[in-house]
Image (cartoon, rainbow, N blue to C red; front, side, top):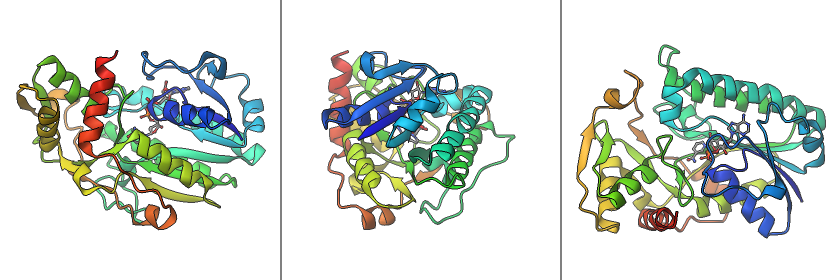
Length: 309
Ligand SMILES: NC(=O)c1ccc[n+]([C@@H]2O[C@H](COP(=O)([O-])OP(=O)(O)OC[C@H]3O[C@@H](n4cnc5c(N)ncnc54)[C@H](O)[C@@H]3O)[C@@H](O)[C@H]2O)c1
């Protein structure tokens, strides 16, 4: 099969692209490398280094592909909160660059949306999405993702919309606010592990290796649909304070855990989500794969990867 991977040099995109290439598929990546990991560059002969919006070959590439993975976008709570305008302009202009071509060529698209579209929840695919007022610019990311979901759903082409819940693992960078690489980097360096807010907010972590299996199985499902993507392992749904504790335990680190008020770290009143644990009943009624990697596996794999770079 022929795959066009928009944003395919990023953390999720590179894991998917590598797997697809290993399985013998033809893969072309378009990525401007703006937030990809500099230690794991994508294969040069498969990659067009360009923004999706400025890529002159985009029309022909969409026509060529059997499946278009739409992964490109400005991501990471820290980046989004610090650069709300750039996030909106990038993510909204991606809609007008990509969706008309999907419509024109009637292409099958897999779009990576986010759990943030649910706001404070509940978190099942048929629930209403929820966006706070634009005075809180953090929600621009979710609103642009929601707009992309609607644009894709109205374009008349086949689609899968995937709402990812904390997909993490080796290769993810901590620079843009991703919690596990940040905690693990601090623990390995013997620095304080900074927990933002009360630390009681709960998250559910899914290893990238499990996410790749889930996504590829969802891609093979017939028709169009929306799915949450995350891990159903109970031990992977924990408070952020517990994450810090498990990181210290797995890595035998003597780092201290320190609480920092959310407003001291990010723009004032950007807020955080109390409990973000996916409802995976719909996903598991459609696929057979069961995530296997525990939080401890994820931490160990990120640490091993960090130590080799
Ligand atoms: N990792 C997660 O847990 C998670 C959670 C929710 C949503 N997502 C979504 O999944 C997708 C992949 O996320 P990720 O974790 O791999 O992040 P990432 O930052 O590693 O990947 C995004 C990639 O898109 C590229 N990019 C951004 N804007 C671009 C543009 N205009 N043109 C070309 N390339 C561009 C970046 O360079 C990067 O390689 C994103 O759309 C993100 O919103 C991820």
